Image (cartoon, rainbow, N blue to C red; front, side, top):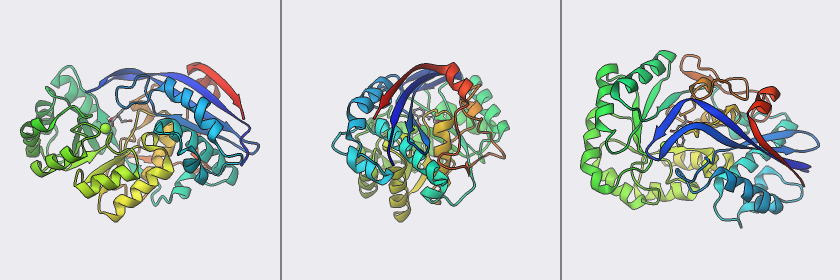
Amino acid sequence: MKITGVELRRIAMPLVAPFRTSFGTETARDVLLVRVVTPDAEGWGECVAMSEPLYSPEYADGAAEVIRRFLLPALPKNPNVHDIGHALEPIKGHRMAKAALETAILDAQLRAAGEPLAHFLGATHTRVPCGVSVGIMDSIPQLLDAVAGYLDEGYLRIKLKIEPGWDLEPVQAVRERFGDDVLLQVDANAAYTLTDAPRLAHLDAFDLLLIEQPLANDDLIQHAKLAQRLNTPICLDESIESAEHAAAAIALGSCSIINIKPGRIGGYLEARRIHDLCQANGIAVWCGGMLETGLGRAANVALAALPGFTLPGDTSASRRYYATDITEPFELVNGHLDVPTGPGIGVEPIPDVLDEVTTSTEWITL
Ligand code: OSB
Ligand code: MG
């Protein structure tokens, strides 16, 4: 498939409410979009890098630079999506940038072939169960109101962001108010150390589905030690950057569940590798999110429809993030999102809306 050129487009998307985690507060999403143009079709990729390197080393300006300066020149002449990973391997890291470019090429290739992404990946479901990630709030009453709203909307699982000073109390309050049947989990975004094990063990009383990334990204050994001391299953997010990391984490006993984020681990082909590895090893997986617009969400929902995704994902409806999405909004129906059925990722940006939120565009002829 010949690529004529690539557009790097930056958009600014205000969030419906501030999203606070242990690493910072987001009030708007600054997104890099990659549009790949071929003679037969166009394809879209959404880069999940944030404006600042607080969650991961990558950041949006850096991702754009890596794409224009190193990734595009390294592409084969007529790339097939299966060759991209190999062609980009000499460039170390930058998996968010690589994922965005590979996804745009994959989307273009599938649109040209008339094949939906879900079919290409091996999806077995037509809709996926959805959870919601709830940020750190200023007060417990404010948190309970937010959770009540999400449960009313039909979300099937609640994830509470935690950090030292906002952990046992919010979890206890949510359990007391909404009962033991609510599927509940927490995400620390690496905010603890192994010395916090006694405090984290108190979470065992609340029958959580999992605790996500309690310790630092590169602490697979310490996660394995923590796993011995908790009954709550450990799920890794930041620590898993590739199928190799997943294999190491499984071998070490660092986790029993993995949050697969395609945009962070290098794309949908690598995501499928992690899925397959986990399935073969009895490790449950679910699809994480990075506050994606409809473009990134469409592809995530396709991935979440694979058979090993046995837990509800952070694949929430568009309105949980944005008053106006750049695609037709994803809407929750009985706690589920429908998997797109059109070719490629199956959705397109709405041109007027896209132009409205665009802050810059750059065209690169190949
Ligand atoms: O750790 O899962 C995370 C958002 C941005 C960066 C990291 C994370 C998150 C979320 C929200 O938890 C997931 C979503 O709803 O997209
Ligand atoms: Mg996480």
